[in-house]
Image 1 (cartoon, rainbow, N blue to C red):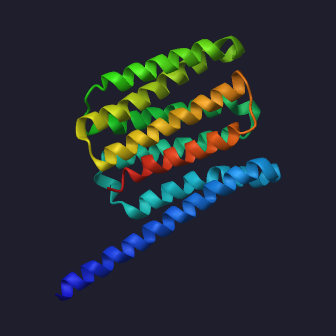
Image 2: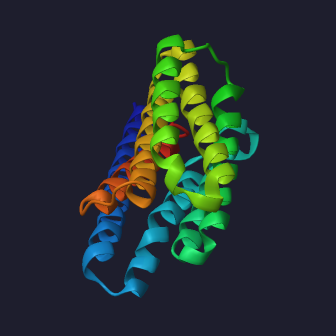
Image 3: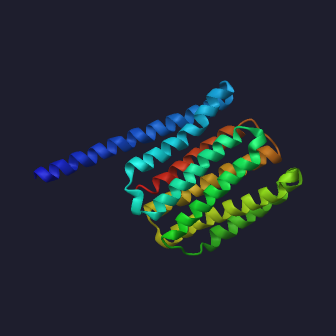
Length: 225
C-alpha cells in the first residue's frame, strides 16, 4: 500500500510537471508569434529560438536517452533546427539556415525509420503530388536557389514519408505524434516557401510559426512515450 501510494504521488507529480512544461512551451511559442508582428526585431530574435531550446532541455530532463537511438536522433534534429532558426533571422544567411534544417530533417528521417517502417502508399502519393506542385509553382521565382530549394523540398518530403511509414508500421501513440508533427512541419515549410517565393500574405508568419512550433512539439513529445 505504501509503495502504491508513492507510485501514485510520483505519477501525479510527473503529470503536473508535464502539463506545466506544455503550458510554458505554448507561452514561449505565442510570444514568438506576437513579437514577430508587434515588437522590435531583437525581441523576436530571442523568442524565435527559445521554444526549440526549451524542447531540447525538456527531452534531456524527461528521458534516459543515452541508450535510446530514436531520442538521440530527435535531439540532434532539434539542435540543427535551433541553428536553422538562428540563421534564418538574417536574410543573408538563408542558404545556411536552409542547410541546417535539411540536416535536421535527415536526423529525423534516421529516427523515424530506426524502429521499423512500412511503405505508406496513399500518404506518399499525396506528398509527392503536393511537392511537385510546389516546385512547379515557386521554381520560376527562386533564382540561384533552385538546386538548394529542390533538394530541401525532396528531403522534407522524405521526412514526412518516413514519419507516416512509422505510423503505418506501428499505429502507436509515439508514431502518431511523430507523423502529426512531421505533417505540421511540412505545412509550415510549404507556407514559408509560398510566402517567400510566390505570393506573400499577411497571416503567413503566424501560420508558419504556429504549425512549426506545434510540429516540433509533437515530434519532441513522441520521444516521451
